[in-house]
Amino acid sequence: MDKTIVELVVVGKDHEGVVAGFTNFIFQNNGNIEKINQNVVKGLFGMYLEASFTKKLDAMKFNKEAERLAKNLKMEVNIHYEISKRKKVAVLVTKEPHCLEAILDARTKGKIKGEIAVLIGTENTLAPLAKKANIPFVIVDEKDQAKAEEKIIAVIKKFDVDLIVLARYMRILSPNFVWRYPNRVINIHPSLLPAFPGAFAYVQAYERGAKIVGCTAHYVTEDLDQGPIIFQDAFAIDEDETLESLKKKGQKLEASTLLEAVKMHLDGRLEVYWGKVHVKPKRSR
Image (cartoon, rainbow, N blue to C red; front, side, top):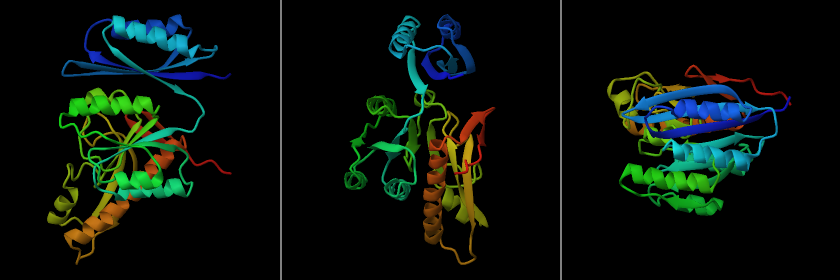
């Protein structure tokens, strides 16, 4: 039997009645709740609810009613329909080009299934790459992260984005942002987490005499660099390795590791439950 899968993400100030309000709403629309998860951090409430519908769903009417319910509960709701279509991707960048270049090269060669719909940068360093690839480039350079995230959310809605890729985006996303896109934000971190957290992973690895370093691509959660791991890779460090050669090798691996994670997501091979990514085998042609 064909099913329509609808994801609802509810975010706002924590108070009673929100979970009951939305679960009842699903039941009233003849839906079945497949997954539900909620969390509260510093008074901010976030809930992810996935529901399935076997009867034909009037999406416009459903959206309008869900938004009215959210308004009555003084919350925000984002609604995403899981349908078979070419997924749209937003890539967030700062100034390091290696990860973005790998994604754009794969796009040119037809090696990823999604559409790179928009590039969002904290500065204009990588704007020429976007222009060359004929992809819209939006600068969001607000120093206040809350204001920056408001603008990013508006861009993501405008371009109807399904997946957000952090290609060395050097800002920390807040729970208010992350909760809106559960298992739809992929980040790359230059170490086999959590050995060397933070922005200077290669310096830490070099100073401590690490023998093997690597990269981790993971879904982003409110816990910094600790989301469900999608893909990891590593390389051995030579005895005569310099910090500069280590960084060069690491950046090359970052790009390939992030690209592999993005491809697996767009291929529909990833499922997350109990905080762990489960990878489906590749389909044979």
